[in-house]
Image (cartoon, rainbow over all chains, first blue to last red; front, top):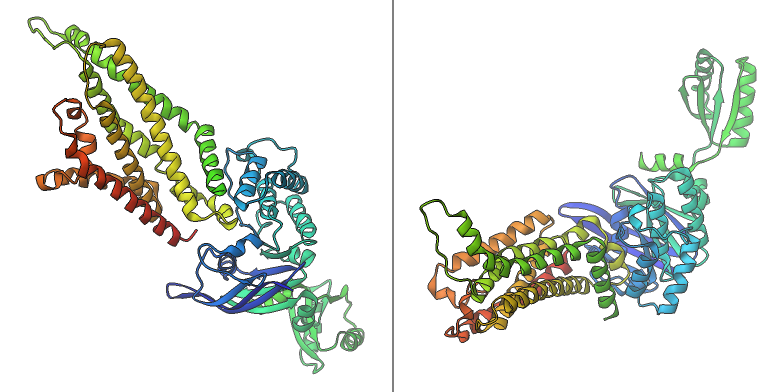
Amino acid sequence: MNVLEVKSLTKQFGTKTVLRDISFTIPSQCIFGFLGQNGAGKTTTMKLILGLLQANSGEIFVCGEPVVYGNTKTNRWIGYLPDVPEFYSYMTPREYLSLCGEITGLAKDEIRSRCDELLELVGLSKENRRIGGFSRGMKQRLGIAQALLNNPKLLICDEPTSALDPVGRKEILDVLLKAKEKTAILFSTHILTDVEQICDQVAILHEGELVLNGSLEDLKKQHAKNQIRLVFKEEHQACQLQSLLVTDARIKEVHQQDTTLNVEVNDLEEDGRYLLKVILESGVPIYQFEVLEPTLEALFMEVIA
Amino acid sequence: MRAYLAFIKKEGLELIRTYKLLLMFLIFFAFGVMSPLMAKLMPDLMSQLALEGIEISLPEPSAIDCYAQFFKNLTQMGLLVIVLMFSGMLTQELGKGTLVHLVTKGLPKSTILLAKYTVASLSWTACLLLAFSVTYGYTVYLFSGDEIFHLFYSVSVLWLFGLFLLAVSSFFQTIVKSQATQLILVAFCIGGLFLLKLFPKMEEYNPLTLVTDNVAMLDKAYDLTSLTIPIFMTIGLTIVLLLGSLLAFFKKQL
């Protein structure tokens, strides 16, 4: 079952079209990586799903219910973590979660047990300080706790790891992986390695259009280039081999950068063997021969180029 | 209703932990103490200031002087303190983005606005009661023989004007982003009411009457029925401003 369905969504701010006819779905228990450059329209999409902005056209369904601007009831299914979560600095984490629980309409006993459970999950169970004294990472973890308070079917995270150090990032990714067992997650980020680590599906938004959408493996298979990297000790050696390969009909493209050649071929196995033969026959000594695995970064750069 | 009460509790906690409530209580307590004391001590102070050859003679202070001082303090400084204290109740939260979590948890915008207005009104009520109780107690103690008329009525219309002023502030907070701009607009609004007083025909509709005639109201001969229209105008405008605030806040994107 799809937790989120976005159909032909368009949003304009004045004369500027920020989102143009985008459609995607997120099934349950899936981490959906939502990628795009700054200003691509990621935050706008999330705010539209939350009913905080009004769409110009298109429809959004959360758990089968339509999202309505202003006061949407579908938010009871959603947990939201903004990029910079802001809290009341004079409250303790437990007081803040209790306030959220009361607003959500949870029973008093449930609020107490959920607070214990979630503060434990995000590693803040022993923090009795006021939130004003928290680090950014601690605030981010508290943000996840508040977002998960109502057992959401959909968790929306807007760049939750972008301002954190490596330890803080790992903590957040671990929490999201745990949360995935019970909820679908829309995970917006700039950090492509985070997406490769935890996401099941990926969509890339570019200038308001969804240019890619699918499972990471399928996308890599479909869009990634077959590349072999050749590294030489001296730059003139790289130049020498490049002059040989550039006229070879079996080689698609050759790019030289200092002592490195990136060679694009049609078939990694057959053409790779052929390439080795050409190098041996040329007598140019090679330092490194590496088949490049398709990466999300390469894919991202290719589609937004 | 539960969300409304939870948000009121949060607003109360904010007032206590940011020491705003303590500060307001101290200021209004000072107003309460100062009013009778100033009335009592003023003749002595003035006589000490008398220069050689000049004799200053002041009438014996009375309870009326205490209340004149009280209404002067409250209608000027008291209302200013309340407006300043609550001038950021919405603009600050909108600027910081602290409401986003709660709205996405299902907290209606109308609940936020009404809870904030309720807490501001309750604070104004408590502060006014504190200042008035202190002034009243001291005045009874210092000037026990004096007879005062319509005192509670006069304080009540001042209270009503405070509620109106908070509604004006709420309204502007929903339509502008900056706290400073909002304060300027409130000041313009009050200035506009003062300008209206220049037109005698508008006098009987002007809410400002509720805070300019308070001492005159203490006279036995004062015709209280002359305040009926300003009172209804003030109540009506307060309701209209609150409804306008709700509408503007609903349309505001977080």
